[in-house]
Length: 143
Image (cartoon, rainbow, N blue to C red; front, side, top):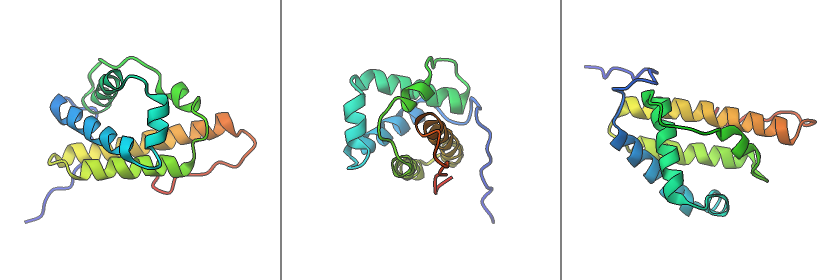
């Protein structure tokens, strides 16, 4: 008997629970903060982790479940960060996938991974356009 393949359905309210999103966010950022590449960046720019967790849970809940709790504009905040590289975005994606791979909800894993790939790619593209308008664009390896 074959296991059905997950499909991209986000946002969909029954895709996952808020608890699953909270666990995803807390686990991922726990790893990112300890990561030799990402940790220093997060620690330098996130001043209130409790507020950041709430914001990220609301963001992923909006993207995955279609809730309307998120208020914010992630693109300008990321573009304003100095010194970001493709390597950093790829590391972010790698850690994110490692985190989702441990989740029991395969539909959540698949949808979160697809969204992260899309979001990471768009952030990196916009970052390059804004920061390095005269350079050739570099795609992420994981995209």
